[in-house]
Amino acid sequence: MVCKSYILSTGSYLPKKVMSNADLEKIVDTSDEWIVSRTGMKERRIAQDDEFTSDMGAKAAKIALDKADFKATDIDLIIVATLSPDYIFPSTSCLIQEKIGATNAAAFDIQAACSGMIYGLSTAKSFIESGAYKNILVIASEKLSSIIDYQDRNTCVLFGDGSAACLVSSRKGSIRIGEYSLGCDGGQSNLLMMPGGGSRNPASHETVDKRMHYLQMDGKEVFRHAVRRMEAASIKCIQKSNLSESEIDYLVPHQANIRIIEAIAKRCHIPNERVIKTIQNYGNTSASSIGITLDELLDKNIIKQNEHLLLVAFGAGLTWGSMILTSEEV
Image (cartoon, rainbow, N blue to C red; front, side, top):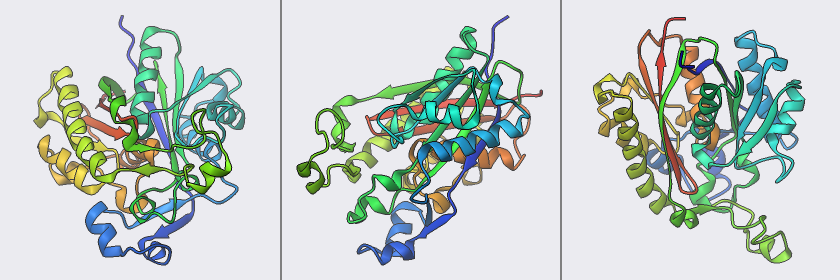
C-alpha cells in the first residue's frame, strides 16, 4: 500500500499591532490610494519589539496541534521556513521545538523566501511518503519588520509579520497533499536580497552605514518574473496532477501583489470568488503568506469533498513553487 500524506490541521498567528496605510503616510512619502491601487494592501501586522519569529511560529504550531488534539511529543520532525530567523544559528526550528515541548522531534530550517511553505510541505510529503517520519510540523514564520527599511517607500509598504503551521501526517485526514512543482533561478538572486549580515558582507560600520542589513528589491523586475514563473508553475502542477484548469476549485496564492494574484487567476481561469485573498489585511508575510491564507480558508469549512486547491508562490532566490491539495472524506 502506497503511503499518502495529509494535512490534519492548520494554524496561524498574527501580531496584534496593526500598521495601516495611513500610518505609513506619516513615515514616508506615500498615500493610501497609491498603495491600494498598486498592491491591494490596506493593513499589515507588526510584531512587538520583544516578539520574535520563534515566538510567533510556536503560537501557530500550538494552534494547529490543538485543532487536531495532537500531542507535541508525537511530532517526529519540525521544518521551519523563514528568511527572518531569530539568529543565523541556532535554527529557529530548534527554538520552536523547545517552546512547544516537542521533545521527540528532529528540527531544521529551510530558506526559500516567500516559497518557503510550499518547499516545506513538499519536503514533509517526501519524508512521510518514504516512511521516514509519520508526523511533521511545517511552520512558516516571519518578522519582516526587523529587516525592512522604513526609509524606502517602495518596500516598506509591502511587508508584514505573521506565522502559520501545518500538521502533516501519514494518518488519514481531510486534506491530501498531491503533486507539486518547484523551481529556482539563482541567476536573478540580486533582484531581491538582504546583502549584509552573511559571510560575504559581515556586519561592520560600512554595511550599517550603507543600510545593507535591510531587504532590497528591484520591484519591476521581480513583478515581471513572478507573473511568468507562477503561471508556468501552476500549469505544470495541474498537468502533473492529470487535472484540467476547470477542475481547480480554489486558488491559494502567495499574497505579494493583487495584480499578480489577478493575473494568475485569469491565466488559470479561476473566478474571483474562488481566489483566496488576505493581502488587504496582512500584506506580504513572505513564507507564512500561503499558510495564513490556507488556514483562513479551511477555518470557513466551505471546502467540499473532492475539491482541488492550487497553492502557488514566488520569492527571492529566485524561487517558486506550486502544489495541489485535494479534500477527501475522512
